[in-house]
Image (spheres, rainbow, N blue to C red):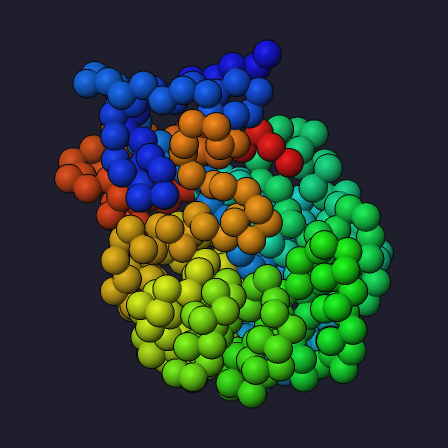
Amino acid sequence: MVTHQYSGTALLGPELEPTKATIYCADGIITAIEEEKNSSPYWICPGFCNAHTHLADTLAMDVPRTGSLESLVTPPNGLKHRILNTSSESALINGMLFSLQTLSAAGTSSCIDFREGGAKGALHLIQAAELHKKYHPHSCTPIILGRNGGEQLKKTHGAGISSTRDEPNYQEIAAEMRKQGKIIAFHAGERDSHDIDPAISCDPDLIVHATHATQKQIQTLSDQQIPVCVCPRSNFILGVTNSAQHPPIQHMLDADIPLSLGTDNVMFVQPDLLLELKLLDTIYHIDPKDALIMAISGSSIHRRSPYINIGNPANLFLIDPTRSNLQFSRDPLATIVRRVTAFDIIDTYFPYD
Ligand SMILES: [Zn+2]
């Protein structure tokens, strides 16, 4: 039996209640939580889920961001796809491997990746993930949503549809995924609201963006409890928003929509939710606890309870506030959202896959 124990101020349960405690884990499961007065100075936070990435476009990192959304990222001829189509297999795998390392170092235990390139593209990410686990056993696991055949592989988790506008067979793909018990996710509402209703009609497991969701669509998403992942930094960078009105994060939180956080294309945005949290605080003025729950809760889409509770899979990372001025914080939860960076993380424990 492999046992681990972690002591510090832990954010316990789905309420993230800061509690001085020691957490005991055996074989990847939290077996006991003992509250104590004199714990270590560390902070213990549940691992994050980056609920929307495109890891492969690591290779197109920081190409000039000029041009429309379509000319940059829309398949099949956007700049990103032209770069990916002319890259070698080993370069693609290496790029994804290093982005997985970046995710792990920033406290991220899983990411939900839209993988292009058909079955071959999905296999490249499977290979990158296996290499990453080999060298870093307690690290980020990608949930792979393929397309053009990638969704059919045994080792992928479902389909990631670019937009109902770009995929005429989206209903058939959704029905097939449902039959196989796999995840169905759509980009929708990134530049306007028109592709949101067709996506909702498929009863998806995840809608990515909802940047321009209307009041009526917010109500439907709420009534049907359809999970939504917002990617605000990407939205600002790609010019599909210029204010806290879009995506309507506070409205969606008020409507009780299951909301998660993603970073979208690695070519434009570093896949680091700690950085994304700073934008939620600065621009959207989201309550720190709501913001942190958004960074954690995406893993419920792939059916894992991410919180620190007895009986749950171990999923936590350690922050050392004594390395810096963070030791003066009066509110660890708010400080994680507003100030903590990957530099402050000293250990991660994400043993499951
Ligand atoms: Zn995307």
